[in-house]
Image (cartoon, rainbow, N blue to C red):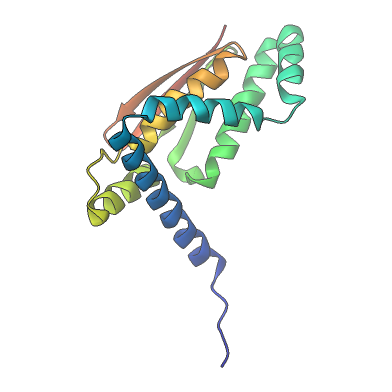
Length: 165
């Protein structure tokens, strides 16, 4: 019997659905236990540890010498990394100044799929749970680098405003 190889796009879609479903189940469980905030504390701690070891030092040094360049690079890296879950066609970066930028996400695929999965799974949670985690965790992580982040949730996406102090 010959097994046909699954196309890469199909693998990605299945993996993405599974990632969102697991995230929804974990969030629903943490919500039921009343430990969502404690979980966010833990996520910040772990994600901060996972940053490349020289990144914080290099960013702080670069921010001292060329703050606008450091900030621009940080925003570009974030937008680039976000593409593992958000297609580039739905991302928009607007540079307000050399110390402020706005990242917009329109027609968010995460939100669309989360709505479908939460309903299908019968979970009693708001489909914007993924937005809630990012809007809680990211500002706390970036504060260490002197970047203030404000997150505005919209009906089908969000706007993330970042300012370098």
